[in-house]
Length: 90
Image 1: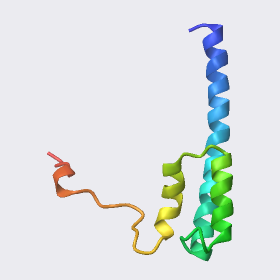
Image 2: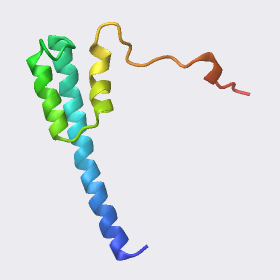
Image 3: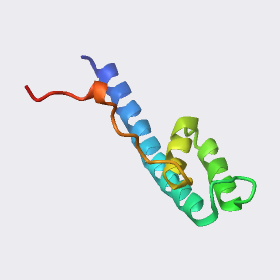
Image 4: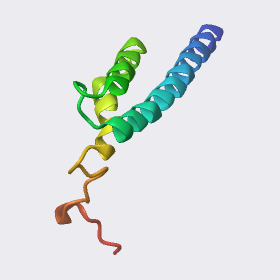
């Protein structure tokens, strides 16, 4: 690989590092806002503000929903695997 590849590679990883740090911070803030004020955007101004911040940072919609899902009533943070996908050890 040449010099141009290494330059582009470094630029891409620098950008991705910034995005990962921002998305992690925003995700934590989203979870805190949902936990403190509820999952409804209409009644929770902190959540509305955090969603606006997430959209300003170009955070994908599925990541916004994932960050606020565990604290919504009746939603589980992850679903257990179905028996058809279990792996046998032998």
